[in-house]
Image (cartoon, rainbow, N blue to C red):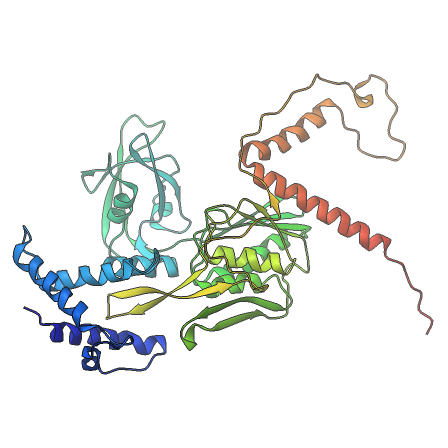
Length: 449
């Protein structure tokens, strides 16, 4: 049986490995046994812990080894602090590292569940799945002979991951094929793309950030530069909806890419190491082009840092709905080679001193995600539709009913697919229109040298 002193020594020894990483000084764990001192472990509570520990060891319906019970105790201690502090066992630690770096050994398939079947959403570029010719819509019936029907999404992803170089055989059902077929793939290092981009209309770009990984800042810069190679940017949409956050430094790098100078974010906590401040360096990659940031209640943590900083600096119009409100910073502290704790160590604040914790970012323009129902008016005839109409004297392009129909369908396509992007695009056009107008109305001063 563990005595209170032995337990205190054990707990203190575990703390010693973590505390220096947090910038704290080492302590003698045996000093924690002195009672009635608020800064030290209370003896009576340690005795209670020891009694509970022994009761579980002796009386629980199944035998549980001491190491497992102590691990449960650590988990409970962290879970009791707040929703974001936690104990990371080997599997959880590996998952966290994979999410942070965006790299893992697997097949490179984004999957979903459709009609109780694991279905390929898309094969990622330059991965074993893409090289094997898997397509969106393919149904994975079996993985190495084991049925995938009814398997949860998390379990499916876990089964598809494995050591680099190992092989797995998928049984695939594909539309247009009478019989399922098998594909054997060799697992390789897969990098999850956190940034996607495209041109929406001539001059208007779109960048989607799904999460903040270690390389997200560089990826955003590359994506914007690529958009500018295709079309001179008149405006940019940064989509942070359903972005759960990620690496703090990456969010700072994203903000820095669009600011010439100024504070990005600062953090405040109990320890000196948690008092941090980040500022932007000169250089706006868009040269001041208007920006709209889209957020919703799934935008959290690092995503809120980006939205809040660009909003405070009046560098972007924030649209959508209120964000999640996770304004705390978690520090990952390794305990040994394959285990760690994730501990809340600070709160972060926007440049204007706003704490986002349990409040979130309020958009400048509220736009709910809705399904739009259009009111169809009667078909109208314009001058361009009349037989024998006169041409445009200025050489302007005529727009008959067919031309207007195509333009209307293009607008309605965006409206049907995503009304928030549609509204963001309209705001960018308005901002660009008035920016050009202001430049044209500026007084011209003649120089007399």
